[in-house]
Length: 116
Image (tube, rainbow, N blue to C red; front, side, top):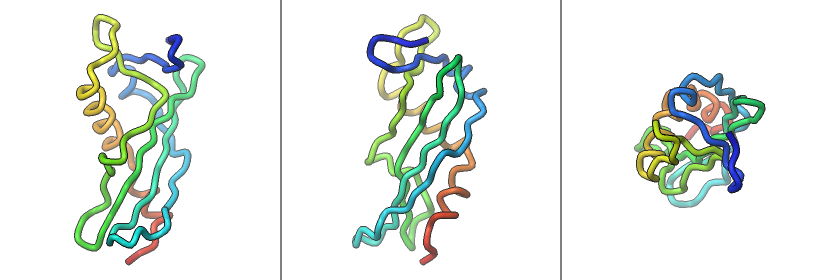
């Protein structure tokens, strides 16, 4: 489903069943704050469209590789509730994080990540 705002609409049940595939992971130049950072993007086909889910990641010597939630998540889709309305932002955001954590994204991030 498409709408005039350009986002594809999808039910969460459909979202979690999509065959997400890694598209790109990149490492950023060192930030000088003790973190190594980068970004990842995954894609999945859905009803003639391609959904995109992208985020930034970070890691330090003291912390594991994690999604950088402060940087925000980027998508071209919205998740619908059972009545067909967009989920409230906080619920939508939580479902995106759950979707990311179901992916094997750390493997791809580590492949482009320089070891400390």
